[in-house]
Length: 429
Image (cartoon, rainbow, N blue to C red; front, side, top):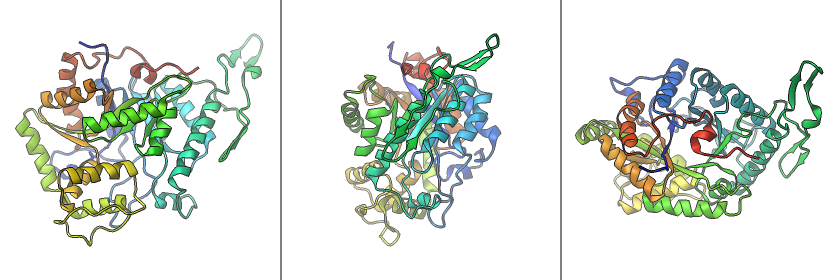
């Protein structure tokens, strides 16, 4: 038994991550079905997950590049999930590249009030010129500028969330004071990218600030996570790589005023079977039906140029100068070199998991793998990415969670009501 407990987020993918999963006879789910999203969130809450996590995409389907629908806008969907769950945290991905800080600060404050303090923000910088072109830009800013903008954006939001002192929303019937205006303050921010007077038009939220997640493992991404994040999402393929990421992240976090070292939650795609043979049969069915051409198109987007003219039986070409997602490209490239992958092999892996680690096995074997990462210090928990639905969620909750509980590695009940409480985080001063 250990006092340290594993944390889990559920990466909500209504059809599952694997591109073939939705075509199976027993597959369920729909990307635009609210009842399905609620069902999935409630199952994760049954499994005592820390958070229900929503990614986002600001680009619609593109011929020969992307065939998946984007699904509901994350903050809108979390409003419905907040009303139909009671404990699980609610994390939305919102880019700092194209929106204004006051709008986003207000939305997260609203959701935190509505949910009783269960909201988190996965801060990202957009990576696609196509996204930029949806907002009147020809192309994205350079990588370093995007992260500098993100740092200032977060600072403005934090100032807005702190612009109301405790008790400022008085609602004092006797005196007739609705708001104590002496406890509400302008922020008067004037920076490189933003000029915001403030204050926010909502009172101090239950958590004071949403839990800040950051998903980026490039140098700039690690720097941002180290300076501001409560939790870092990442994609690592080995414990050694995970420990190296932790060391770099902790170095970036050194000297933080709050003294916090971000929790680390790598993405993992577990393929769970009641036996090892069942799990491997399930994974083989998915991989045998993988569209290699689609995988090469996905790699082309990451590599920054068209790979379809290369021999799929040949070696993996080097990435171009304008890659899409530096850390994920580096991980895939390293994997291809270590395993001597053909282009076909890397395309099959990339489209199956989008670069995250895949673990295949019986419940004990999945638990063994997660425990090794956890006890080594390479992870404080995991963002669980279902390969298929609904079994990707149901089997993990019903079969793997009880094994971890029996080993004393995972909670048997929620002990707090807020996302900060689930994660063991202090309330910001």
